[in-house]
Image 1 (tube, rainbow, N blue to C red):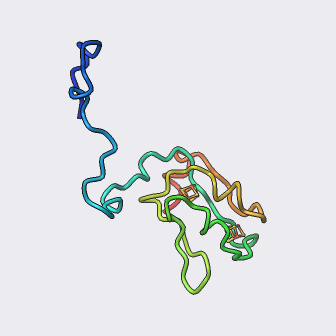
Image 2 (cartoon, rainbow, N blue to C red):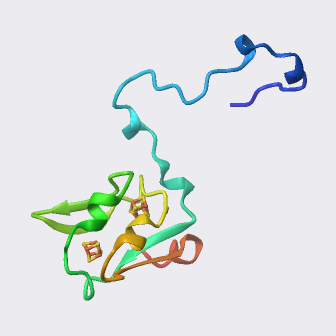
Length: 106
Ligand code: SF4
Ligand code: SF4
């Protein structure tokens, strides 16, 4: 979507298009934000001690767990913010260049 902003100096508040409007509650699943990612988290299973801290800190609930163990990253929603890697006390998560891994992982 794009807007004609050539006369934006003359806009009143009524002319501004609505932004960041959530019309339907719980609709975030419809918007796959993984496409924004430039860095991808890679977890080293040998180093990870399954403390689940990354799981709790991920702002996008993009770290999947089963039976109290991390299983994978949900790349449809992981934005590559790196919070999981920053918070991991074991340094078990490395953020790698998305373009470099796209052809080699998955
Ligand atoms: S990089 Fe950010 S969004 Fe992706 S799994 Fe880690 S904390 Fe979640
Ligand atoms: S924070 Fe690190 S050690 Fe803990 S579960 Fe996540 S990757 Fe594993």
